[in-house]
Image (cartoon, rainbow, N blue to C red; front, side, top):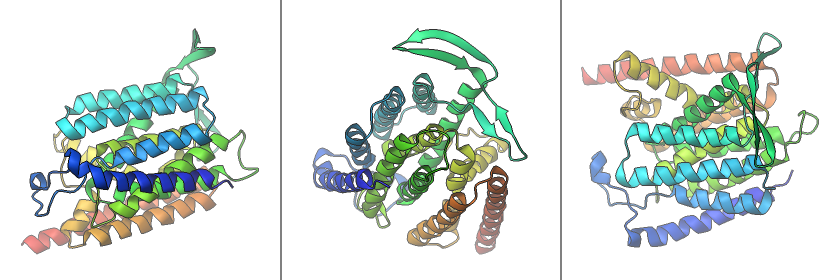
Amino acid sequence: MNFLPLIFAFVLTIFLTLFALRFFPQWGLLDDPKRYGLKRAPIPYFGGLAIFVSFVITVLIFVPLSKEVLGLLAGATLLTATAFLDDAFRLPPLARLAVQIIAAGMLVISGLGISHLTNPFGGAIDLAALDWNVGQFWGGEYHLTLFADLFTVAWVVLLTNSLNWLDGVAGLSSGIAGLAALVIFFLAARTGYHYFDQSAVVALAAILAGGALAFTIFNFPPPKILLGDSGSMLLGFVLAALAVFSGGKIATAALVLGFPLLDAIWVVLRRLLAGHSPFHGDYGHLHHRLLAAGFSQKQTVIAIYAASAAFGAIALFIDNAFGKLIALAILFFVMLAVGWKLRHAKLEKES
């Protein structure tokens, strides 16, 4: 295994984060604690820019620039720039969603897509049955595969928002993303396990892991710098792309990222059932419930790290899709039980 891209991204992110800590206060790139009722001094915000710059530089050094990699970099750049503007000026939710869809579309146009899903009961579900050749562009032949392309876009948008919503407690998004990228790195680096070359996935996962874990050193509670949407959305977007890069390993990625994914799906369903917009923020995420039940920020982060690491280990050692489906179902019911218990405890505390 080549750990050089990981080490390079780790060191570069530390350097860039120290740079941000030094100069962001001078440039006014700080958070607004009063907005969230926090009684502390402002700290540097927009820290995700350090991960973004480190990611792009390290990719340009270590990863061959195929059209797929260029599509990933273009989508990541668009998404990070828009999230930076959203952090600064609060863009409308639909505008953010539109940009996420466009960024996901850039991956599809570059040739990335989920053509099939492994059926846990045997065989595969073909998503590329409807296939139209749309012609030659930029030296390649392009096809429109309706279900595959729509599923890919939906997957990328879901994971992008999952990591964004997970950033309600400092250290969560960057730490979980680092753990997930490490698992994908070890999975992709296995020899004799894949049907096609995984070298780009290995390098990209290593780079993301190095950047995310380095930033977590400064973002872990009590944080010295905050990630911002520009960082959390970037992490979710790249992780979603890695699952597509690696041949549609959706079940594996869903298991590795089971906590943020299931939390996001549950929150969206709960908001819709309550008649609210799915983009209307609230404090119903599981990490908010842990805090409300009396957990400290450190305890909350460590507990979720432990759960994510456990399911990441399961993803490493379970090879069949049915086993991964069972593990996801267990995780889902565990989260429901914990959420119900925390809500019950809070009601008892208030009564």
